[in-house]
Image (tube, rainbow, N blue to C red; front, side, top):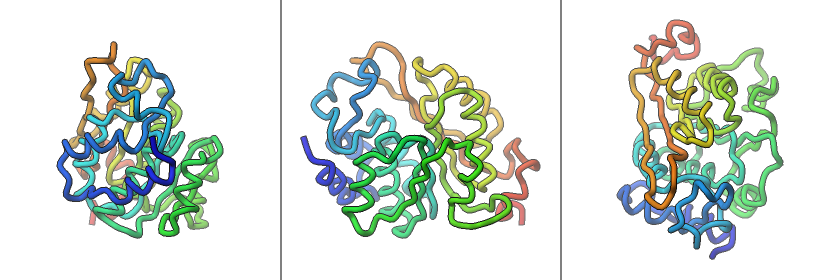
Length: 253
């Protein structure tokens, strides 16, 4: 068991750029895992639950997302629905380590920021990010990205959607991401039997896109199918165009 600060330091020190997917999968639990909805969590990870950064993911899924995303050019990251903040910390550090050490980062949730995020921001001086305490549908969300503007401008490269798990919430968060000119949209719980609307939303959304990736490995110690990560990589041939074309000037020069 490690303190929050010790766990964050391990995340920051890890070689995300050069480690194999298998090495990442082995390392992830040592940062500390979530201890909520334990029926979803593999029993082999019980010693890692309830301390550290409390990330709420399966290591065999998240490690594959990391190896996919780490070679992409990403200069800004928004996570909708951060809970404790463990996944946000990991993703932020992966992008900082592999793409841009000066990444613009925003964490969004309707709850107050956790102690974990407070430590991440205030005990590590190189970690500037903005915590947006709103429902993701709040009218002021766009304006708090740093520009006082009358409408959104393309500026967020990667959005991780893991907030409200209602079908229409997910669809609306997806549309917000497109309004931000996003390159990569990540969805959580795409196969989880705990949240059927997440599965339905993902299955509808992915039909509109050419490049999709799914990381849905499970664990034998768990009865059922849970979590799951889906990624959309935006291309100019996606069915969302020409409707969202104005937010993607780089695709349509």
